[in-house]
Image (cartoon, rainbow, N blue to C red):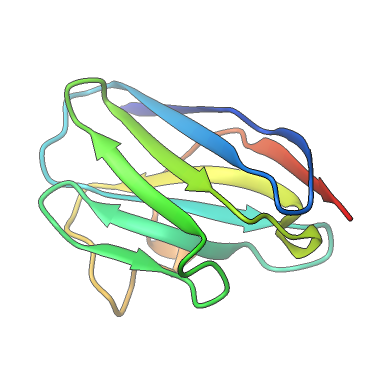
Length: 126
């Protein structure tokens, strides 16, 4: 079993920055696809960024150039650095993981992920 715990959400002005963290606990993992998703009420949960522990980094078009996903295996933590935040980035952000490699064709499929965190709220005001 794997548990995911997000932190780092909050309220910021447009143009500001936040860094989200997702700590992985439980069974050890070597090959996994880790991702950040976000969701606003009434809408589908959408993939924001994905990273494979053995390689591969992917971003949604809406965040390219503004968000950076990284993974520190020694700390078992996945980070999402978010810069130049916009009001449209306001959402609940979730960390997700699955025991397989990431691929460009599937990292955004929320149904592929086995493990999910509880989420952390990000609110960007104009």
